[in-house]
Amino acid sequence: MTYYEKYEHATGRIAPPDAWRLESLFNQIESRQLLPPRGQQAVNLGLPAHSLNDSTANPSLYNYYQWVLRHYFKNQTLNELTAKLIGMAFVCNHIFKTDLPQPLSLNPWQRDQMLDYPLATDRAVIVENNGIFALLATQHPNWSLINQGGNDFQTDYVTLMQRLEARGIRFTYLGDLDAKGIQIADTLFCQLKETSIEDFLALQTESRVSEWLTLMGHPSVKRTKRLMVKTPALQKQMTAISIFGKYVEQEQLMPIYETLISEWLNSED
Image: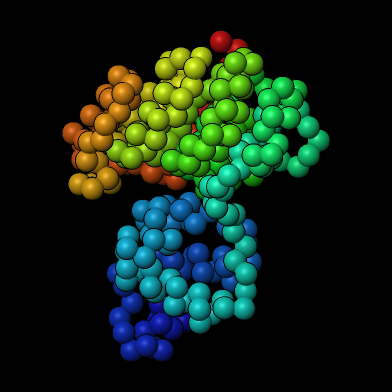
């Protein structure tokens, strides 16, 4: 008997239309497989990234998901990578030359000591999405990554970023392709002092953004409503999102990211 059949039998209610999509996930939970962050789980099932962690995204499916967890896995800790990295920490992977386990989380009291700490790289990819950062760092432990953590622009983070670029690290950026995601990218870029827009958008180029919106975009009036940005190149990406009326989440781009990031980190240009 499937989980949605068990749900219908126990509650007398019809399972939501997309309930069948969660069968493989529940089987993975049952066998205690290591799961990616929850947003990636949803996209792997053909759902929008927030379907399993936002009760307002798809209420009926979210409630069904929670019901199954409560009734069949209540005594089992989910074996999943966490995406809860926002806060006071500067979280990075393979940026500093240290034998400490990666990723490395630095608190504000460590900031000054790390400003001139030996570096392990001369280029790094900034990843806006916490879950994508955690997944990439797990699957590619030697990649040089920095977790941007959404709109968390606390002073210690900005200070370390400015110091790293002053020491010669080249940054490129990957974020959600919705209006808020572009605004976050713009806020970060405006904080940087020596990073060129060509480097910053070397992977998230205007042409790729248009292609991804065309091929993978989800329609949404709310998430594509134009927001103010200062950087001309990011204004163009904002315009594309507004005109298409579609957005793309980073979880959808994981297979593409792996190729693009690998090529950029290993490039000698």
